[in-house]
Length: 199
Image (cartoon, rainbow, N blue to C red):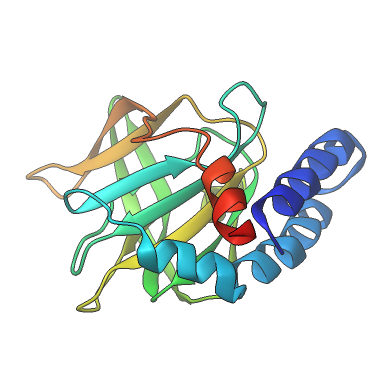
């Protein structure tokens, strides 16, 4: 599946989302995302891309669209802080390599501080999809690339995220929430993927 077909599939699911349950949305996202992340052409694009620094985030679709399809590159040993997804529904799969996902659950709120409990762990690999849901045990996670080579993951957010919260550890074992803007190193990269697949 090429990036244009994935974008079209996500747009169609977005247009039908009000009539679907959360699980039906995840089920409909999972098939196209798994097909996209197991495509050798798409994997070849990720392998040929030269990410900068230790972490690179690319928006594959147009930034004016109400959803986001994001390609993220993770350097060896690099990961994210614990973070939420601003109550969007979405799904994540790996395009190259593997990343570990750890989910977290908020067990108590104390102003800007929260107590978290670690939940499930999941290895994200090509074709394996993990959901993002507004429910408490599906919203917060961290991701880390524990391998010695770069990894790339594809994240579909059915409602575009502009701001989200990171959870920073405090000395007393709680976590302080910090609102953060979602940024991209480059937007509209899907156009380059389409051209690359044709050449």
